[in-house]
Length: 172
Image (cartoon, rainbow, N blue to C red):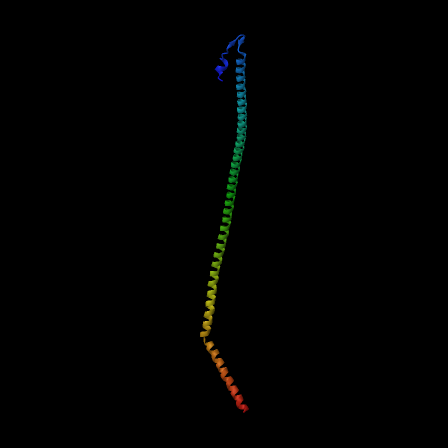
């Protein structure tokens, strides 16, 4: 029923005024329309409340998710920073170790170089002494004393044979 029908309704007149049955029928229709609209309004308000609750719940979830994302980002940033600091510590330690190793290597190289030079000097001294010893032995081999010694042994051998021969002759 339209609003104009409700307010502009014309009733037939009867002996004592308006037709009571028509008025009552009209009021019943208005009442049933009002009841239907009230039900529809209650239904729509219920749906609206339900949707508002859902929306509120979704907003709460959204807020929680945003907070979780921010917390995760902060944690990720903190982890990155901690990893960066740890990497810097490792690099610094490695550089210090490299310096120590290089210093040790340089000290060893100097020590080996010193030992090498010392061994070269000792080798030169040994070579010179050995050369003198060999030269002395060669000089001894080439000297007349050696010939005398060799002849001496031959003479003694000849004499020993002569004595043995003489002794055999005497026994016979």
